[in-house]
Length: 364
Image (tube, rainbow, N blue to C red; front, side, top):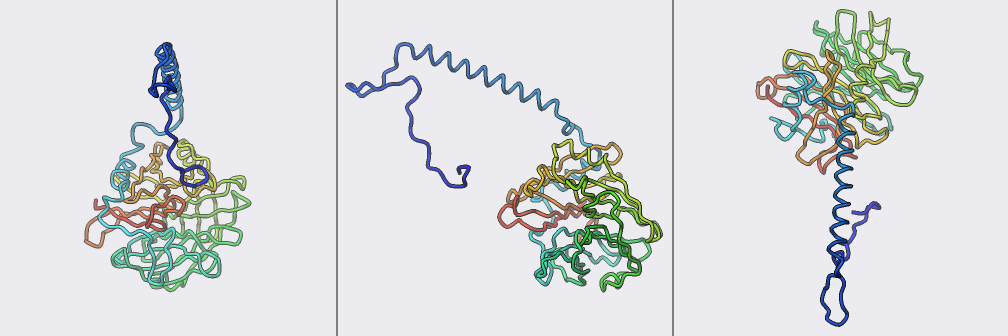
């Protein structure tokens, strides 16, 4: 295929270098000096190739990329479990709820009763994102339970340890992080929030969002998110909400640097924390080139060392772009302990039949 997207015919048939055809005999004859000439040209080309290859090797050895050793036992375990989607014990591409709505950027947790809860967003007919929650008994079929309203996206959910739940999402206009608390599961599924807080933008004049909830301690909620650095590209933040009245946020440059080491010049956005091998790790997305939705990759970050491993994801069809990653440990529909992973595959990097939300799990 040519650069303009059109198919080309094969190249014209050419005679080998150093051959010429006599008009009388009609056969190929090599000029007397051809052997010497070809040998000289071949040697020169070989030398140039070797020199270029050595230069590339030297350049690569000086790039601040990945180490030969995993960042941690947790990141190594995650890559071993999650990199090969074809080895999953269960999966679903193009996840939708029972209304047919796409479940984009879905994050899934398991309630104490065993029911699976998914929060996600969908672009609706009004041209705006709507966050919603759905329930499932098998991770494959989902019943939509409540719509959290227009202008809500990138939702994240966490149990508060006392039977209630905390929900956070990005809210527009003036993109910012919104946090809601629910006393119990029924209140969550019907949208009856006991506490509400809309965070001020303190790190960016343009946007802050894609929240994730890392911990809930009484009236204190610890979160992560992104801010639009210099109103240009998304970078990481950590935040604390106290008593649903007091908000503080700081940049997380250490996490940014770990992903930037892979040549990430675009956005660094959504992330989720999960524990494996007795250690915490963060699953995070990074965009190789800004505005290129086909260049998203997933990374497993170790908070202790400040290093990250690229997750070499492989799907059955060979999709190449993966965004909005989340992961959690669950009891799977078969009753086994498992690692559940949720990823969004943009159309720009999707193999046929794989675009949209992918959910899969591996037994532990």
